[in-house]
Image (cartoon, rainbow, N blue to C red; front, top):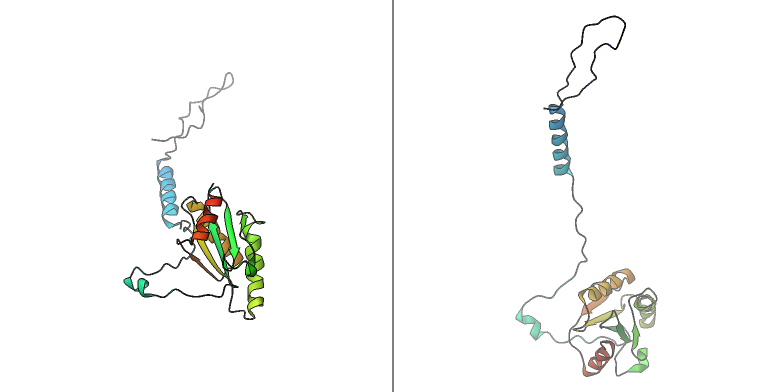
Length: 186
């Protein structure tokens, strides 16, 4: 049982003799019970923070996917990003065998002066080149076997930060892209 001591209550030395007072005891058991009830109440009524996740549209797992024809897109709208080892990125605009559209493949990283700078620049310029604001940039993300899950999450974050309207994760590489992947996976 919990108790509260309030002093000895007896007289001091000298002076009049007084009768000794009993120590007063306060039972704190009820207060401890009340404290635990309040803690329990607040723990049960408090809402915990919900995990935040990025919405990701995944294809259906049907046999109908094999019947779908590949979609042809304008090479002026596409940007391909190859994710490699050691946080390295190789990207190119348009088709790899048509350097007149976007230039040679470039190696960069995940910094704000790396891939984000290029994405922001092209998100604004591609609709102007196309002459239609509805025809925005399309990014094709190709992770290699040596890239990490963190790299994929980082590039998806960049898509959200730069407000890229359309992007896809693809795991098929052309022979030319395999050569680029080998360069950044060394």
